[in-house]
Each structure stands twice: as C-alpha cells, then as structure tokens.
Length: 102
Image (cartoon, rainbow, N blue to C red; front, side, top):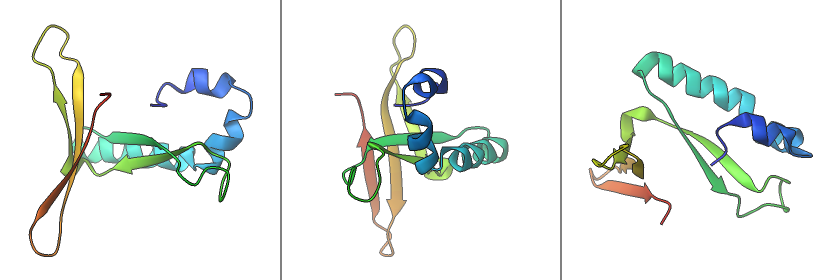
C-alpha cells in the first residue's frame, strides 16, 4: 500500500506516476468522505495494464465508506487483518471483495 507519501515522493519519477494516477484529486475525495462519514478508505492495487496505457505500476481507488469496512484482530494491538468492500447487484445479491496480506 502507498499511504505514507514521504517515502514515495523521494523515489525517482514517483511524482509523475502519482500525478498520472490523479493522487491529489483522490486525496481530496478521501478527505471529503472523511468529513462526511468520519472515516475513509483507500485501496492501492497493481496495475494489470502498466506500460500499455500508463506508466504507473499501480491503481489508486477511493472506496465508498458506506459499503467498505476493515476487520481487526481482537488480540493485542488490534491489527487490521481484512479489508472488505461489497456491492449489491440489481437482483439484491450482495457481492463481497475481501483483501488481506495473505
């Protein structure tokens, strides 16, 4: 995940990559959700089209916090263990997308 921007900004060429991914606009969107809902979520995934349509090796998404949540470990430190995003299709069926580091 690319969240703490300081290290990313220091890497060569990363400003162009982050600009290509429209990170400033997505940061604003993230802040807007935070002001509205009290929380916000960002997802960074590898770009399967990297090198074809753009130079960025990743895609940045700002997720709707109304259908996104994080599952935390109930042990010491309460580390996040699973990110979940869901959508309800036109038939009322709920589809879950779950992400973890495993």
